[in-house]
Image 1 (cartoon, rainbow, N blue to C red):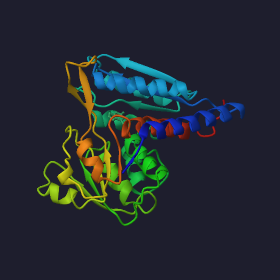
Image 2 (image 1 turned 180 degrees about the vertical axis):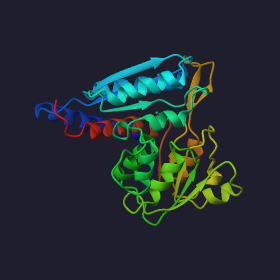
Image 3 (image 1 turned 60 degrees about the vertical axis):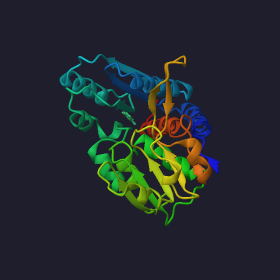
Amino acid sequence: MQILDGKATSKAIKEEIAVEVEKRKAAGLKTPHLAAVLVGDDGASQTYVNSKVRACERCGFKSTLVKRDGSCTEEELLEIVDQLNNDDDIDGFIVQLPLPKHINEQKVLEAVKREKDVDGFHPENVGRMALNLPTFLPATPYGIMQMLERYEVPTQGKHAVVIGRSHIVGSPMSILLSRNGYPGNCTVTITHSRTTNLEELTREADILIVALGRPEFVKADMVKEGAVIVDVGITRVEAPETEKGYVIKGDVAFDEVAPKSSFITPVPGGVGPMTIASLLKNTLQAAGDKPA
Ligand code: GUN
């Protein structure tokens, strides 16, 4: 069993990006600039956005954080998106999800200029991904693909089972793993809350991607010996005895599943850090060869 160490892999990627940024500056190219928009006071979202901004600074990027409280209207948010679309110094930006209920998420995502959509959530970019055209890949699936690649995990001809059909993880993951390339060329089954024979399917999986947000849902008897396990879950579970008052749990019961696996991502320190590294890669791509 080998741990797919997202912390170490993302550190290596961020170091490569930092070198690239220095080279760009020396060559008279623009410093990449990422903006993040955070609406409301969701604790987990605040943590993610702060990590994204800190990672930018460490890699020599510029970063801008636009924060609004939960009373921000859809119109105000669309105005912010419009300003970021038209700000020539901003190469890429993200609107952190979930948004408050009174805001139409899809409308906001569609308002983001395609060339600055470093989350890859705009319908046109989703379409480009499905067609294998150059685009921005959504950060979490992109991070998983990079981890599979760097650890040279065999994927061709394998049966990949994805649990979860979200637009952020499950759905794009199923598309990327079925594409003709490496990592990819898998036979993919996508499962969700209405799947009736889930355990039968997970036991058939050579590669199991778990993204449903239910702590320790996948147990040892649900996985095949030698399977590759990618755990996308990050749920805060109350733990009054800890300093923070919570612990982070993945969707996989790691201690019992790990001994059966060939490769497995831990939580924390697996997929999470890769997501941030991927966002930075997308922002670097967005900056392209724009002059300083
Ligand atoms: N919320 C959970 N994951 C993501 C992500 O990758 N991007 C954004 N914008 N919001 C998220």
